[in-house]
Image 1 (cartoon, rainbow, N blue to C red):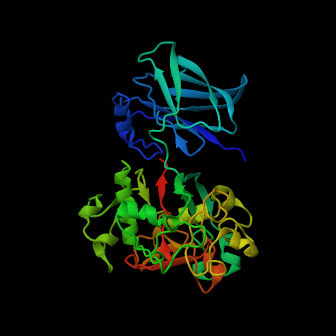
Image 2: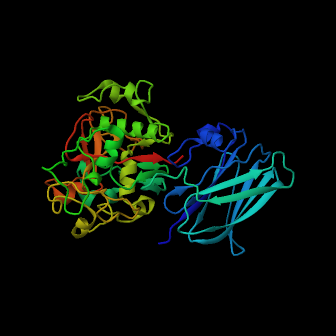
Image 3: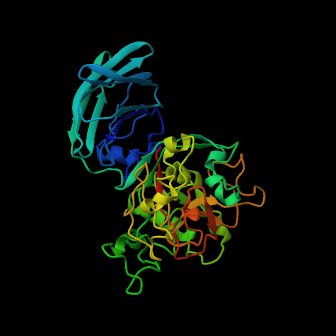
Length: 444
């Protein structure tokens, strides 16, 4: 399959600081200062995404009188796609192969064209980030739009190893139940009668490794390290998934890494986003920490919701729309599970370096097996037991346990607990050598 690139045209009239690029840098107010400009009330953002999970720099249309816009994608004088939008909307054009393209942008005030311009550019699979500057002359009257493209800008690339996951609304049904096993813990989140809307997001293609955790937290709590628990032959200790991580510790990691990467943290405790102000990570249930809030509009790292986790594990939109969705991440064949997952039958009773098994259809690794992965959601609630058709996409409002998904390297029920429908749970303070996590980012 050829690599896909997106061309996105996002129009923003006010509150430009709310716009978040899908990168590991900073929000638009800071991006504007980087290129020597202050956000103005009628900014427009034009972004080109290239192979290798890279994002382009934001560029601005300033002080435009336009009331609507049209973006056209042309190749070999053939119009491939046309999209229109008003200020405040997002326009997306998809490029499916390398080659020479022309982008044409037209600005309208009511029905009159007030400016338009074109730019030729070439996209190659080896290209890195791209800086795009698009200037609509202030108060332009039938004046051209200047579009410039500069290759090789790596300042604000999207984090390595993150996969773009296109969202949709999933219609729940019995097809998501693991092998028709009508038990509560094997029905997944897409229940019969439930409609779950999932926004676009980015998911790390691997579980957080011991080295990654050490770099952020300054320590490695993992059971599987040292001479007593060495990695398998040919595997790197640093790249084994971190485990013995509590849910509380996982949210600390997310905010600390967000701050380190100049992103906006998602989690707030007592109105504060800096983990050092939260106090020590609890080792028993803590009401203050249990009241943590997650702002899903922020661009920082966070745990996936349970719905996001299962959606990605099943292969996203296409996987969930299939008449018979896969029972495991990447396969529906139990005899092939060892190709995709480290579990009881092949793990040799230990964790393994991430990304050694076959990835699923979204290019994500280890969503079945290796270590259980913490999710944002409460597992249950006194008022709303488990999951019903009315459960919000982010889970129930309260509970005693937090959700774990995906199974691990060692469980008695073998393949059954590695199924993507299987729901696990433990107290948020609990640590165990089976429990790790991976992170996601919202794609606002």
